[in-house]
Length: 261
View 1 (cartoon, rainbow, N blue to C red):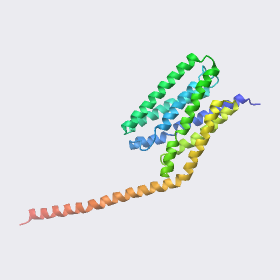
View 2 (cartoon, rainbow, N blue to C red; view 1 turned 90 degrees about the vertical axis):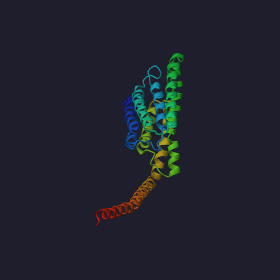
View 3 (cartoon, rainbow, N blue to C red; view 1 turned 90 degrees about the horizontal axis):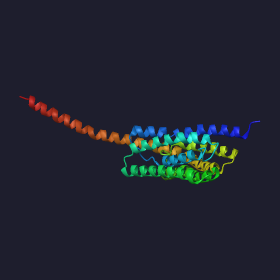
View 4 (tube, rainbow, N blue to C red; view 1 turned 180 degrees about the horizontal axis):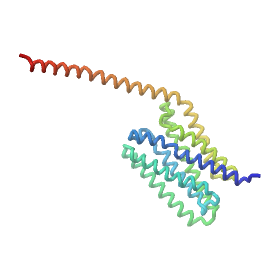
């Protein structure tokens, strides 16, 4: 008979794979940002929130804090570097100096906070239970921030009735990620994994519902915008054409006068 620990390990590995896909899902978004040379209306909040969340969980999974949580460390350690890459790209392609300054300030505060938390927990909390409790509470906060951060994007979707700036794959794999880790937490019950991933299921479901609701309308709005841009280009071209003809006629008359008897 397969043990609960073996099942938990398999689910954890699946969770690692899904989480990696989740963390890499914004690549398409940043390729678009790179090609356009602008962050447009994309928000840095989800990436800052995810970075904070991953740093907290990487600390939680360390043997000195919560033993037997290697799979938690591996995926969150990898995600830290991925999210930092996104934030750096955002800083490079953001044209708003105030926004860049805010992102840098939040990033600095997150790094300082996490360094202080690690130092104080290891020095002042002398048992695994106490360390797990303190860091686990921070992890719950971090997960809530990560899953709730798209609320600003969801508000934009409802206001504009368009999902253009809510990446579909990010929403989809957030949902799958929550299912995997929620299951992982239930096999050997871990309250600090259960609460945030349960909330993640709710937020993920809401995002997918919004996407299903406004997807067709988004296509229509994008088609209308493209049509207006094409019409504007044609109008500009039509306005320029008489000027070219006028200049041609004028030059023709001048040439005729110069070559005349």
